[in-house]
Image 1 (cartoon, rainbow, N blue to C red):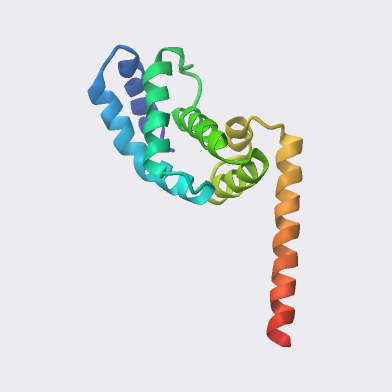
Image 2: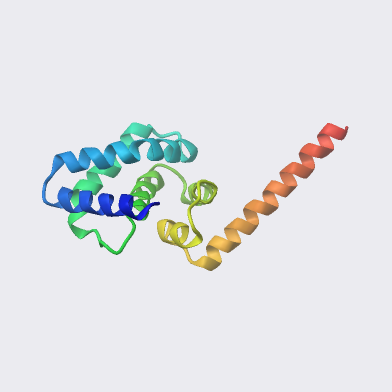
Length: 145
């Protein structure tokens, strides 16, 4: 993410902490498409409800936001917390890991969002790659038959 966008988002969070609803709207509009895709990949729960719950937390917790942290990581962590309340954590975490890696999240960011160690992230990635290879092998065999 460009540094100027990170700066703008951090400024919006500071403005939200001061009670600025316009800044909340700007952040909401920026993250609505990302969160819609994220939640759609993770759970069958109503996506808009999850997004609204996430932004209620943004409003309530904006005063505790650490400016050295990425706004994207912070919001995705809040979003994942809401998704975890709606679905089994193990399945959800694997889906979130796949989605976040696929959409360009760094290993550090993904570990921070999921609150998992690098070792666990690496293990889950290996499991996912192994499962994908097995799926491709079975699919190839069925096409050959």
